[in-house]
Length: 478
Image 1 (cartoon, rainbow, N blue to C red):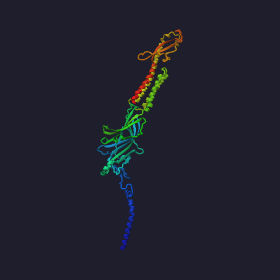
Image 2: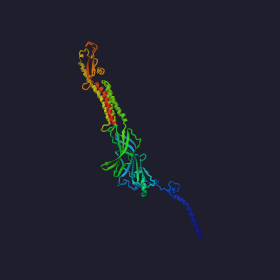
Image 3: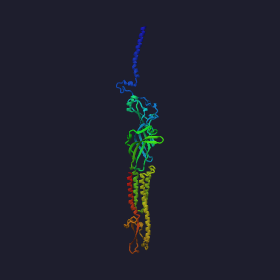
Image 4: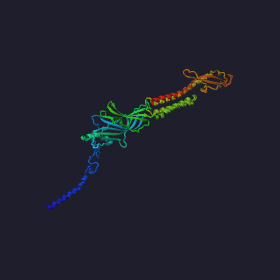
């Protein structure tokens, strides 16, 4: 009986051992961690490498960066020296420049660089981490704004165009990791912004002008004691797209500067400037303004070659040129701001307008003097002795108004009062020979006139004066 019990126990023990050995391999495979299981693979790529916490799936960025352990409403190093914030800019486009509103629109990538040790994290392979705008709202970022900005916005298609990259500094990592097991972090924030800013333009030389505009960047709340703005690499911090072009301007230069701005209520602030110089294209204004104005002035000179007795021809020509010049001046000023000083285009247009107006006044003077001369001739004919005995006084064939001064005798005489005069012989033909006894006999009387000489002088003085004005104008403003 005792022997049977011992044998039964031995059999049960042997059965239990054999069952445990058969279940052990299955259990060990189920309980192995992913890292241990992969390490058993022969030739595995991560054999004997510890995992990088920045690349392990399932680790929350807030936990890795320990965002909940710090107060990010305070700037980094609060109470210490100012936080250096480097800035660089990539200008994508210069969209519009308005003389009426005196502003410009620019689209750019704005990048900030600063250190914040509160965002430090463990990393064995010095890998950076990139985040979108959702994390930006949870940490401290520089409060940049555009001075003299009228409108600005960040792009949000298809999502907010904001990138935050947190990465370790390799040099500090390798020198301090054995002591602190963490590194100093550089934060890299990129924004895509479109901004419309003010540009104070001097239009005294318009449209032959060159304008310099500036986009100014500044911290809104932090003075230079708390935040130090600087261009990360000087002028090389400003990059532009070579394809940028404007219809009315030639972009001559982009450059950067840094200055201090003072506000009496808050103090001194660092301010960064993006300066660009623009030179206006003149060809559009030559076609639309200068050439039409010059042609109107030249058209007004045609009246000097028209007979002064042709009133219906000369008067409408003068009025048409005056009205056309008024239309050109009105059209130019309609697209310009109401400035209180004279622009270069105003000088040219108004001088041209004066030339056109003087051509009308010139004909008025010629016509008035001609009328006075006719009155004198009528009085002279009444005093002629050869007409008192005429049987038919009405038979006198010609009068002054019917005689062309260019077809009568012209004799050079001395100058009187600085003006060279001409003598015009008025021929009075008589059909009847009863007075002199000779058929076809004539009587002559000399009449002094100088009205037609105004047209002759105007043909030279007006073009010569206008050419001289153009030479002076373009030599000054070109």
